[in-house]
Length: 336
Image (tube, rainbow, N blue to C red; front, side, top):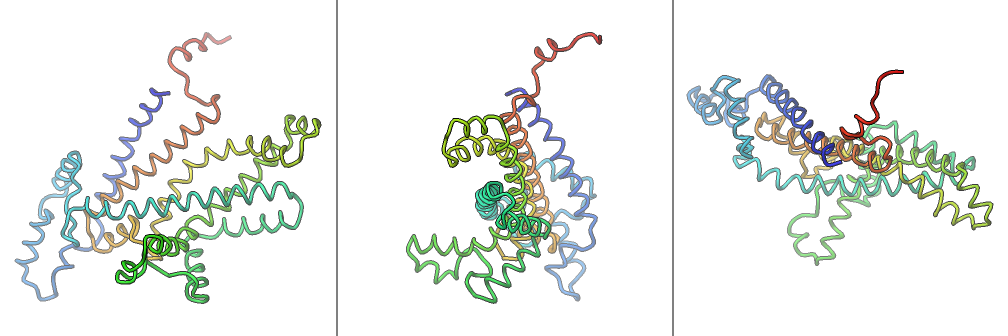
């Protein structure tokens, strides 16, 4: 297993390198000039040339690329053109906020999705099952930006139950809260973004859970448990549910990339100070160092999520584990 994990980790290096290289040249090929943020229409061309020299944009593109690659190998993401500070500081502020939003959304989508799916399977054919199926298909088919806007319109502007943006209240209000007050304020601000990010994916998990539960309830061990006279609750939750839950664990790694990519839209709509919002702002400002850093970090998180999915698949089903060299040699043979 360790050798398989090491090979897959090494295999992700060319992928991340290829993504970063592609984004570097696409970002620099896009129309626009980062120096225009600091210049007016009647600025002296000498000032613009001096700015380009300070940003390193006066060098040939291939030279800029290799200089950036050399700094990246040393763990240096460079300095932001717009914010005039190290990109690492910007990421250290934004990444924890994105991880918080994604983690809460992950808990919501699995807890809610599995609960709805299991309940729908137990009540198969009833009005509850039909309503759950209808709502699951509806939310699964809706894009995350539409769900975010509808939640914002309904719960923030129409009913005024939840705040529309930011991570917490205004600074002078937030600092006056007690520790529990600050926690409650952050949870209230987290509710809409987490719900918008998880709602569509939750519907997909609910369908997986329903199908897995229905399949488990038709297995022989469930019939045997019922034949022994065990209570229906014990049969469902101790026998059927435990076996239906195992395939659901493998979905954990698969949904991490979806949450990371979906956070870009949700963070922008709710003004959540995370990595997605930082990336969108940097794209509009032509802030190349920030764009490159957020792209590489996002690619690493997506790759790690995919790697986690592979490991969970191997753990849940030993039949799909990659055999070692000795096992492969032992099972191989001449064709009959």
